[in-house]
Length: 331
Image 1 (cartoon, rainbow, N blue to C red):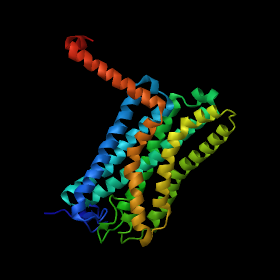
Image 2 (image 1 turned 135 degrees about the vertical axis):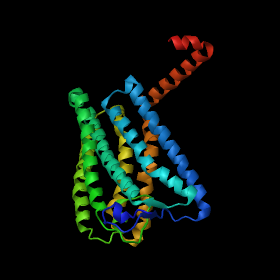
Image 3 (image 1 turned 135 degrees about the horizontal axis):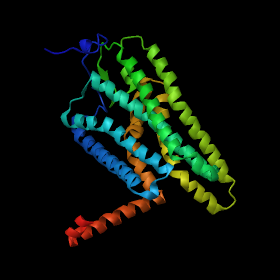
Image 4 (image 1 turned 180 degrees about the horizontal axis):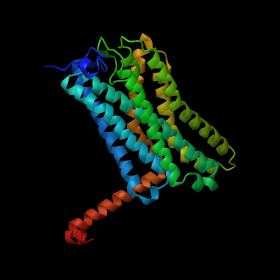
């Protein structure tokens, strides 16, 4: 006997699953899309896991900025794994369904991770502000205990608010249609399927979303205004270039993240902009996690040097193992 979703969700919904329409591509393009997104997922996981390994293993990267970078890379691993494996499965099998509980779980993880990323990007911008504008006080302000409190606080706030919003969404009635015009369970496309009054949920999401996103965004903008002002006051060209190089990678990531996020969530929900917003969801949900490691590694001297040390060390240990395995075991 099939357990109905109305029983499962205490009669708050009359459907058992949703259908993710995705990109609406023809069947012959499914394999091509699978290959493209599979490559993106492999590069995303490889790059971000490598950065986490570098930050954990290399003593030279045990600084506040790289603690934040390591957490950001860990977040990107979770972020991509929340969306891409399910998407890849749909490309292969053609099964576009997702259970109600699975959809709400994906929505919760997505909301939580995107809020934490906002906090992390703002903390990284504040770190750069202190390093450039208050270098003599850097060790005092950005000490290990404060960093730990900031990171734990970011996760607690994001988890609490995301849980509250998703819980309220789960109390809505979904009577059909059951087709979500998106490639994952996002907030606005899901609300459009509800046959309940969604005004209170939208107001709650607006209030808590503003609390979770606006302060980090304002802190990021304020930090970079102060950073750019301080850099312009440096008399020498070399000094300005060196100061700007310490924050240019992070500035690129912030621009990509908030730029696409603004297009998707600030523009009005109209039929004309629907497909455009879905297309712009790909950069911040899929591409940004992949390019972040590339941006930080290609434009960051410390990360490149750490990667070289890791490569040399692994090669050296490999040579020892081939020449004298017993020596390696004793060591």
